[in-house]
Image 1: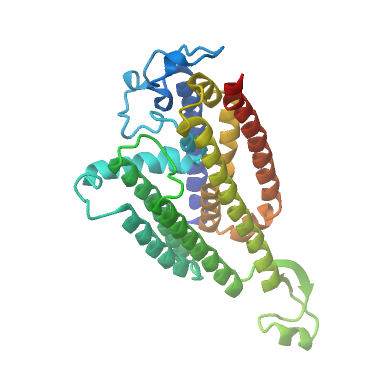
Image 2 (image 1 turned 90 degrees about the vertical axis):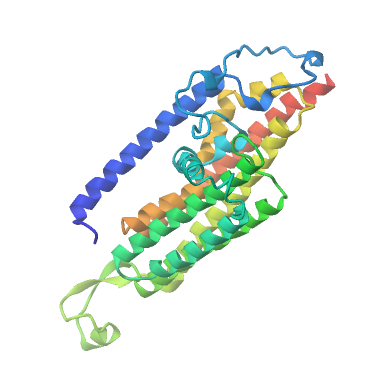
Length: 358
C-alpha cells in the first residue's frame, strides 16, 4: 500500500467528510442563489410586455454583483437545468478546475487545434490504460488506475467546458442530437465499459470469498491446493455470481444514464428552449423547491455519481462489498427518482404549456 492502512483510512474518511460538507454547503448556496437573484435563462424576453401571468418576478439583483468569485470559475453563477442535475463532484469540483485549466492554458482561445472531440477521444485512451491497471493484484496499482479514471472524468468535463466557451454558452447545456453530443456519449460509454471489464477481470482472477468450509480429508485438499486438514477457509464466490452482481450494477448505470439524459432533455425543452412559453411561469417552475428537490435526486443517482462511488470502493479495496450492497437496492433509488421526475414533468407541463390555452 502507499501508506499504512490505519493512516489511509483516517485520511480517506477525513477527505470524504470534507467533500460531503462542501457539497452540502454549495447546494445550500445554489438554492439561495436561485431563489434570490436573476437567472440568465429568463432574460431578456422580447415579448415580456405581452405575456400575462398571476406571478410576478421580484428579483432585481444580479448574482454577479455580489459574488467575490469570478463567474468564469464560479459554479453558482449560471444555473441551468443540466447544472441542477449534474453530480456534485463534477459541478462543484471538476467544473471550476476545468475553468481554471482553460484560463491557464488558453485552450478555448488559442489552442484551437485541440477540439472537444479530441479531448473526448483522449480520455478513452486514459480509460483503457486505467482498465488494464485495474486487473493487477497490487492495491497500489489499482489505486493508480482510479486516479486515471478520475482524470478521465475531469477530461470529460473539460471537453464540454471548451465546447461551451467556444460557442459562448453560459452554464451547463446538453446540445441533444449534435455531433459533439454523440461523440461525448460514445466515448463515455467506452470509458465506463473499460472500467467494468477491468473490475470483472480482477474479480475473476481474485474472486471474493464467503462462508467457511472445514477441510477434513485429502479429497478436499485436492480441490483446493492452498487448503490444509483441520483449517477453515472462506469459499470463493463463483464467476457466475460475480458476473450477475456486476451486471446488475452496470444495468443501474445504463438505466440511470438513459433516464438522466431524458429528463435533462425534457426540462430543457419546457424551461429553457421554448421561449414562446410564459417566461414568468417558466421561472417560477425553475426556482421552485419541488424542482430543486427533484433535480437534486439526479445529482445523487446519475451515472457519474455511480462512477465516483465505485471509484471510492476500488480505492478502499471494498469493490465487492459495494457491488453486493447496491446491486438490488440501487434500483429502488432509481425508481424513486424516475417517479418523482415523471410527476414533476406532468405538473410543469400543465403549469407552463397548457396555461397558454387559458
